Amino acid sequence: MDTLTELTPTVWQLPFPVGHVYLVALPGDGYAAVDTGVPGSAPAILGALARLGGRPQQLRQIVLTHSHLDHMGSAADLAAATGARVLAGALDAPYIRGTAPEPAPVPTPAERSLHEGIMAGLAAAGVPPLRHTEVDTVLHDGDTLDGWGEEVRVLHVPGHTPGGIALHLPASRVLFPGDLIGTDPEGRRAVLGPFNVAREEAIASFRRLAALEDVDTVCVPHGVPLRTGARDVLAAATPETDWL
Image: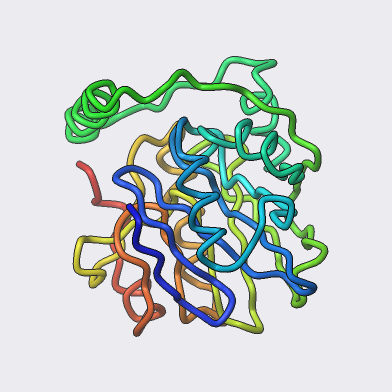
């Protein structure tokens, strides 16, 4: 969990057992975090920021790809420690704020067994309770993010959650897909992320992301980031049959 991997000159992966975090260097000595891990992850994220030479107040944005525990889990703590603004998809914002109940996934039998194991592991690790947080900026399909030094396109990719988003950086050919896309431990195969609220929507969103042309690096939250042949790996994926 202490390993910080440089994926591009401005993007680093901070891996966690459940839900990786990505740090992005912004122009003018700032940083953004894409997702925040499970509750209790803020100290490790701030430690990684320090290893990059950043101070807490230099974290300017926290972008949440969706509302699940392993993505928004430390957003409240991280925002309080840094003053960073929290950005998230408009339809997931009520779940992140805690003003509406989060819809439950509809798991396949294979997913149900996996979910039970993950939750048991988190309980055994003593993960603290979830704290909800304000969302400062709600994002919609077609929006762009300010302050990144290059175009960052927001894509609404429902199915995993109602308001899930992906971030596409065409100039640097980077994609943050949220949980729509995962990989195997070798990073050779892309799979549909499990635990979707609407499986067919999730498959359609996966296919939308797989069709993007300007993508070399796929910063998946679970598995190994795709850094070589990403478009071929995505084209070969068969999300329709995953987790059945």
